[in-house]
Image (cartoon, rainbow, N blue to C red; front, side):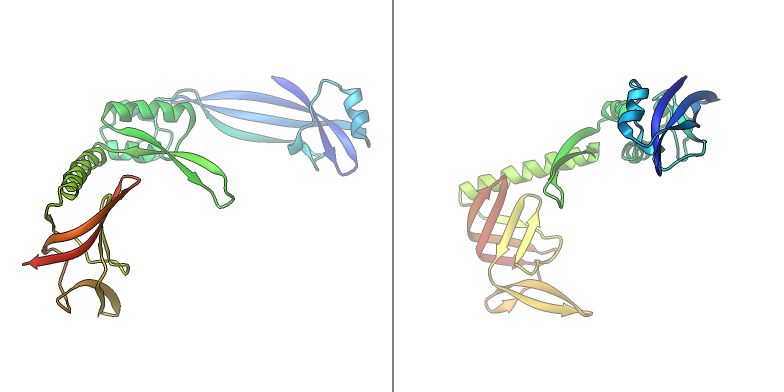
Length: 252
């Protein structure tokens, strides 16, 4: 198929023909070749050039060019085949490697991505949308995957969240076994639950600081210990519980 376009080279507006041809490559691929052929100079004035060729568009990528050239591009005619990577040319639905398919999903777009999305959903994945603000205060959205393992952990964390929330409402003792030490603000975060200790002490190990809660004037080992929180107040904001610890004990 041949179309025509107006370009601009230094002084003259120029006339071009653009021809596309497609060559089959197999495995659902085609090779598209686009030829840009210089025909002639038209005019110094854009309005004159457009008046002479009223139905021909001005094409920006022809700016500054007077010599003919061509471009090539690989085009895929199907959506069900891996287009790159270790499974290239294999049918996606026949590959039993969901972790790789999830990685592949993050590298593609368009109808191809929609097809891969359906395969992942069939195998227990969930696709969610995240809204964020760019450096230039632009609001954008991005899709991300939740694996079956992610979803199971989310359900488990929600169950733990509800247990702790009920204990807070009933002013019951809360027990935790922290997996790491406090941060420099005195917080230990477990999912959407933050345990805040007002009185903490900075310690050092191999040149790095770490922070421990203070009990009876002494800092106490915290990580992997059974911590009983006996007195506290709490706040619930934006589905995050902040527990301000007032009294606690640590058991070995």
